[in-house]
Length: 605
Image (tube, rainbow, N blue to C red):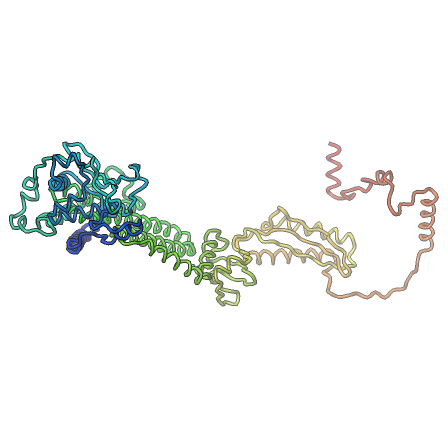
């Protein structure tokens, strides 16, 4: 019921203004058009000059000019002139009067016929080439004789001054020789007062004009009633109609469907009431425009509904960058819809939009060149939103700037640095920089290198390696995969022990807290080992030089002599046999280690 209440309120607010606007619009348009014989007065002259033929005085160089000329002639009651738009065979011309045929064609169109809107009829001398009717034929409407419909076809024929378009002889043959004037039987003539029948406007009784406007209002009211009934039935048939998404979709379809129903009821009602083809043809372009408006209004409301639905989801995820891009795209889509609809409407009224589109294209290129940086920033914004390397609130490093992302706009991104200043970076430049985002880290790298005194004994280093590893394995916040410490270097002033581990922490402050605890525990281990951390200094030892050991020197010389006599001197390289003897001769893991013990036990088992 909430859905129905909202839609009902929309109906009540838009019904009377829309009907009044439609009535005034139609009257104003018709009052202007009634005095104009054609919406395209210069079309035939332009096309004929392009084709190399002199202008036709009756405007028959193209199909649209022929139809417009025929309607204008019958509107003035000049059936002699109207007959010039018909192609009548010589044999048929002997039997029937061409003026009477023109009159009968009008009566046929008044009773059971229709003509396409002028904008849908070709205004080119060659006609429509892809309608599967042949190069010299053009379909312009339909009519019905004895409940059998047929197409109204124009045919291009040669005249003394060049080719002209006429109602084809096949179409003329379908016109009955005698058609009863159904004017008195028409509903509009039965209901209208005599004064409105006697006075004419544009070659048609005033009653027809007023009846058309009345039918338009009634059609709108009828369409409103039908949509209201459907809205009452939808929740009873479709239970999900009360959901937010379904309600938005239904709301988007309400007004466009109402306009479409209005157009359909107007066309059906005007034909049923017997309104003259002259009146209906005057308003044909308006019905086409109303249909275009209904389609684009539907697209407009769907774009608005879908983007607002996405906007709510982005707001729940606090994706401000996505919201900014969505708002921009929504505006761009709406502007594009308005532009396309305007072009179609102008083309329907007969304006040449080709030149305008070309001018817009050139202007668009010039604008793109002038706004190159702006477009670069927009493309950068789209890249940031699509890839999402950062989000609002992330702590990151962009180039040499470190700080927290505060805003991602369509032109630039703002970062609050550690000094609490705001740095604004254009998105075009931002997307090309190296971005390091610290916020997604689930672990922090703990990677200190301890510098132990150079005079520490090997057993002290072994003690440190074992106990420091114990700290890493025992700490609940250190991830065990990997968690290692290795003796990596003997430098000129210290012995280096490298720690490689990851600390489980949700943020940097928590990591600093855990790191502090680990450092203190490792310092206790170093103190317990009896050694200490090396200072960045040099130690000078004053001692008495004991000289070279003559005993060990003579032993080394003897060993070298034996290698030479046996031809086994391992310089510059060892022999393959000796390498094979030495391979795996050093026990590893070292004797006395846990690893060696486990290896022996595994070998026994």
